[in-house]
Length: 203
Ligand SMILES: Cc1cc2nc3c(=O)[nH]c(=O)nc-3n(C[C@H](O)[C@H](O)[C@H](O)COP(=O)(O)O)c2cc1C
Image (cartoon, rainbow, N blue to C red; front, side):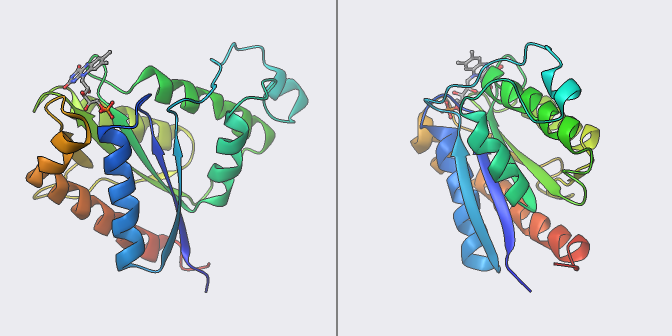
């Protein structure tokens, strides 16, 4: 049996709190379980908005744009599971992450089963303690549900809908100092591994 493959995505345009936390999640998974990881950050990347041209639907050959999503498409196909991390922007996911998720329409258009059996969880990083982390996680879960991806949080008593981090707007140092947020992160990663074990037995 091969190792489980987990892709972490940071939806922040900066290499700051979200970058730190998603990497921390992947390091934790790698060190504790038979898991290999890959990482993609939207920071500095060229990601065009979906323009609803329907090229992907008509041609079934992927997206009309050849930008940095090309790398994301390969990574998303490679992975068994996703850890999507987003900074909270106006109470929800960042525009960058939304753009990336919109663009996955081209994957489903080419192959409606492309995400079948994959698993996903989420991390929300807000500057405020209750700044919209939960709506952010819900948006991540909605993406999974819509796209046939099994969705998991971290479970009751600590990480309910997933990992919630309070950065106090202090970039990586702020996120690192949020010890209860980190507990929710590790609990969520433990849960992700448990779900992988339960659902990916055929690997
Ligand atoms: C446009 C924008 C909107 C934001 N809206 C919120 C918000 O609604 N709630 C919140 O808690 N923090 C908000 N923040 C703060 C960021 O979520 C917070 O600083 C986060 O840790 C940034 O992640 P990063 O360090 O990875 O970029 C906002 C920041 C920006 C730039």
